[in-house]
Image 1 (cartoon, rainbow, N blue to C red):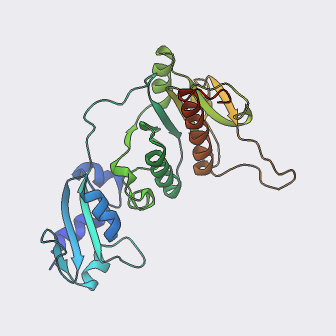
Image 2 (image 1 turned 45 degrees about the horizontal axis):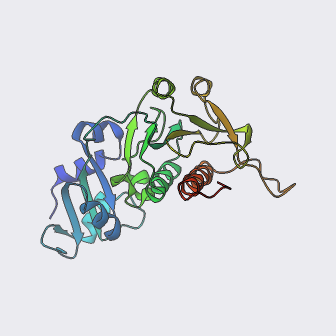
Length: 254
């Protein structure tokens, strides 16, 4: 049995205002909840048909429909405490970081968090206009990586100014940039800025970018103007890490 006040609390967590107020977020799905449960503090776990391990509340399918944000509810929903970073996230010449400038699509933000986990990106810095990483859609798209990737929402121009003061290279993807495959790139720490889906990197942020990169198309006349921001982020991370590994192993072509 689930109380009306609990239903109202969970419903409110669809909105950032209440996620911030309560310090809580929602995740759905047996695999996702189990992944998050291994790393984060659960506020409550709800399961249809009975407790899985003695630590969840048994509810009916009808009750799950009342609290689920999915069209087809999963048999498990978890409410978790938003993690607090143990130390401030700052630019560092020893860290690979991504920065999102106004990326608003929750699916893209979640997928980028997931690829940050895959490529071992040390931290993710987001502008205030970027989709909240603890919104239900972002959490689902991250596939649990939201528990692994250190994330900060900050004034990006000021953050990138700090990077310049520490001699940390700042790369950005532009249609008028130079080919990422031909430019010399740092094999150590750097920050890669990805712009919004419609407007790209804002002028205020662009002023702090030390090197403009372009991912060239190898198919003439394919009719595609640009890559999805998630795909572009994956290409850039892969190329940077390829060079880092190549240089660490002494490969001359890196």
